[in-house]
Amino acid sequence: MKLFEFEAKEIIRGYGFGIPESILIKKGDDVEKKIRDSGIEPPLAVKSQVLVAGRGKAGGIKLVKTIEEAIETTRALFETPIKGIKPSYILIEKAIPHEKELYVGLVIDRNDKRPLVLASQYGGIDIEEIARTKPESIIRYPIDPFVGLRSYEARLIGKKIGVTGKALGSFERFLLTLYKAFIEYDAELAESNPLAYLNDRVLPLDLRITIDDNSLYRHKDFAKTEKERLGENTEYEIKGHELGLAFVELDGDVGILGNGAGLTMTTMDLVYGFGGKPANFLDMGGGADAEHVKQCVSFLLQYQKAKKIFINMFGGITRADEVAKGIIMALNETGIKKPVVIRLTGTNEEEGRKILEEAGIEVFNDPIEAAKVVVSR
Image (cartoon, rainbow, N blue to C red; front, side, top):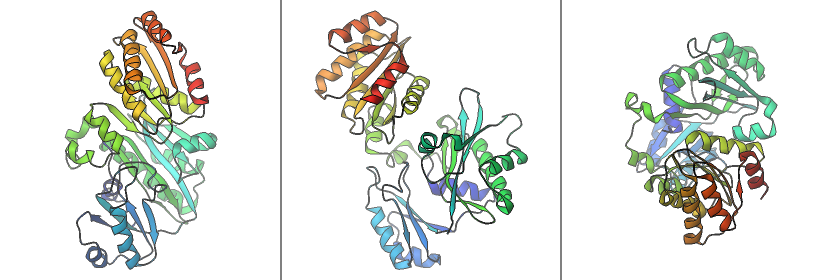
């Protein structure tokens, strides 16, 4: 479950780390009264609270110099869709002048089964973009889950991304705080981007935390009903949820469909590795029949961001012939023509390949070769 920026910042504030002065406006509040009564002084950042990435580029963050401008901007942002959804909350925050922005985050390294710190001297842009354009700038530091992140390790990571002087102590405190939140809130992701680098401290200008859904019974303060959270998802995420699909919208143009979360993530990594950008995460799950395959493929064919589609299937309990039948059904019933690249192996592989090849569709055995092809189209 993704937390809003203001929720993530309240967690960090609760651990005693300072964050910028702010007020939260809810849809339906008296905007002018709440802003004027708060006593917050410009310059200010007015920020849409939506559970999607890239809101700044989409016009969801505005810098203002007067209270009057803050009032007007807040009202306007409530009516401005960000990637298909209108915000229910606006965070108004003291704008902090700074010259340099960093990136720092924590994720679970699934291969090593331990937390991993990611940090870079280049903040303010997507970590995927940093990885593509400046891969050498990303520090990857694995954490022993039995020992935890230690102070000297936090300082070492700070030094590696260029933090010095008094700000190094502040960076150490922030990273230790972020790690504590990551562990205690059972997070899959906790990151600050950008993390402002000031003369004597660092300050999280943005924060994202994603809690593992399986742990929500331990975090009831954030466990809003699925329906309430759904209202903050994108149009296609809502449609996917209504169809019972494990779908997450991304910013690229390659539609991704796999069977199993691990294979789907690996498929996304292959696309990134060859210079492409996934448009989504869509896990079909195991044991799907032709009807469910048809539903997933039809959904991607109609998904506007997906200009081409990469279907990566390894048949175990999922039969390759059922996958092939579902793909053909989706293509015939929707009538939508997009480049579709298919890798198909496993149970009933020969039957599946025959069905697709008879329909004039090329089938790949090597996922690396298939990824190269879909990125190049």
